[in-house]
Image (cartoon, rainbow, N blue to C red; front, side, top):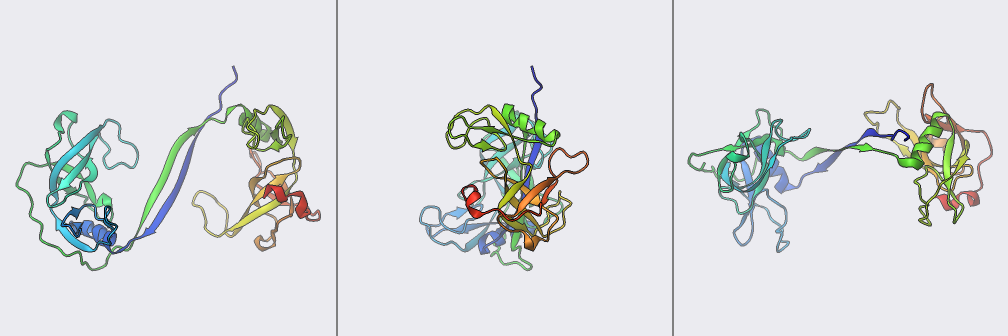
Length: 313
């Protein structure tokens, strides 16, 4: 049996968002060890606060402080914490209705084991040692058997308000390419680009997926395409990626390799970024020991006619 190819992959990007007045006050409050909710027209206090009433869609702005103590309304035990979770040892995910609130806040509860957690138990916020204006300023909740804390009645106005946050988004997974893409990867190791032809529409798709994306029928006939191709469309990248040692600006393009029925993407080099254009004829450039083209460069041929690649835009 042939070896099954697989590799760990990570998709990661920082998500940056600005904050409205309600979320700004909430996160700034956490930095100052104050928990704020927002009061609705019918007197409910929502924690975490939202900018609009979920039932009436009315805009909300009446901030009110609630206590850092509360009651567990439901919970689930986490036997194996993952990277980036609040605690590195097993803990409980809990919904906590803080004293003075009418809705529950989701966070972690530091407890010895699942037998020590129950619905209705009393808990208190454990504040992080260093706080910056984020939900992680609450390090976790901890069991608490004392008297409820009394909020001081903060109105939500602070100096040096938090106005934006950066939330990292990350997905870790193991990818297995399957038969068709395994053959494509093997071809790249020999500096060849191999696609598969659809038996119905006869188009050659690169990279192959094992089935025609147009007709939906299985593909198996392998066809070598390229190595030259045509830029069908492109974009200019002005933001440097932290894991790529490429100076900006540079051009990333869709390239229709000769003989292929679908454009693949690649970086364009060997030409000023502002001279890249649709129809530019390019060829691959391989780095020493590289398993795929490092970039594509102009061949010096005349530009391709638009009619020859318009269906692959």
